[in-house]
Length: 292
Image 1 (cartoon, rainbow, N blue to C red):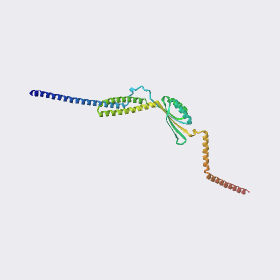
Image 2: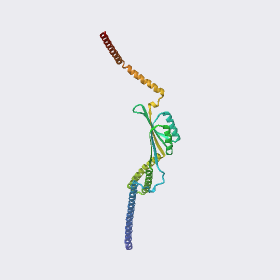
Image 3: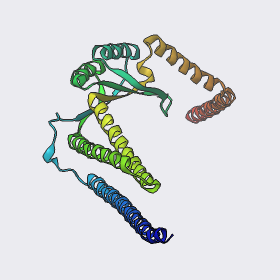
Image 4: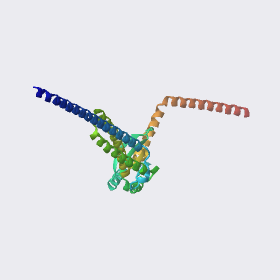
């Protein structure tokens, strides 16, 4: 019995010692994991702030030092106003030019002028930019008589290159955000990164739409044709003669509608002339008597 008691005390002490060591290791391990999580969170926050700084820098003017070897981006446009003397023939010739130079009509409208004697219309044409000069040259032969012609070119090369540089930076920032999203652990971190990703993608879509617009405008030139048709220039000589007779008939009807007034005037003229004639005869009779 005494021997058992003698061994029980050291065993109990050893058990308590082991329990104390285990508890201390668990506490230190928990502290290590917490510190590691804080470090990861701090690193994520710093990376997000760094990418935000890159995003702000992207919105500033991009230097042209890293210009890509783009050819000049020129948007060619023309605006021609002319009198349409032969609508059918001119329309057929324009259709032939569109087929010849691979063009097409994007808009066409027609309306009567304010005075009712003219017909105004607009035709908007798109042609490949490499056919622009040849199309204009042939079109002016067809039109012959134009009242105004305006051909102008817009150079968008610098803006196009700036947008390409911004797109490269924005795509790099998007890739970095995706890497950070994979390492995010808390809900707040995920939401913050996804919010920034949404903003970046919106900027990318806007820039891409702008670039596509430039590419389309450069690839196809716009030609606006504004024409007017005088009513007398589109009718035949027989129609003009008929119109003249019609106008004369209207004048005659107007005169007939005034016949009572005309009759009164004729009667008054007749009476006045008769009175004057009588006076003249009476004066002649008096003179003859005096001479005899």
